[in-house]
Image (cartoon, rainbow, N blue to C red):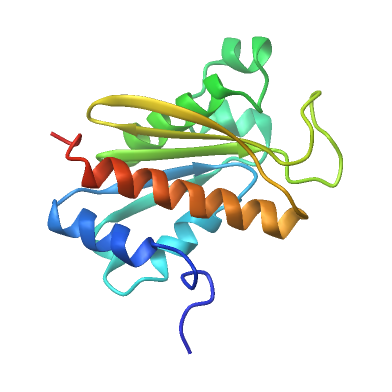
Length: 166
């Protein structure tokens, strides 16, 4: 049986590209609660590239574990572009990785901090800086979380392939 988290994603290509370029990745995940790291780990050989992941579901852990500034959380909130950016840079820094991915958002069933269900902020930090994308994802909790992971894999793969890693 293949890993059901890997199926339907480009994560095998991501692991291959990171391995080829001798680069590593770490995650800081809120709404996905480790699902991205688990998806990467589902690929044989992922231990070469996956440094680790931080599950920062609780707002205080976004600051305490991932290094998101208290001011960012106080002003912008836990579901914000700035928070995703700081999660991504925090993941890379705290885990000693070349790339960091930060995911924060609202999977439902209810809105959070004025943000509707399906709002997701994806941050990818690398040697050339941080890029953040806002996603509006349809579906229930599982569909939103899986789509956020797929988007993170796709964005990171694109960045690694583009050669922006130095």
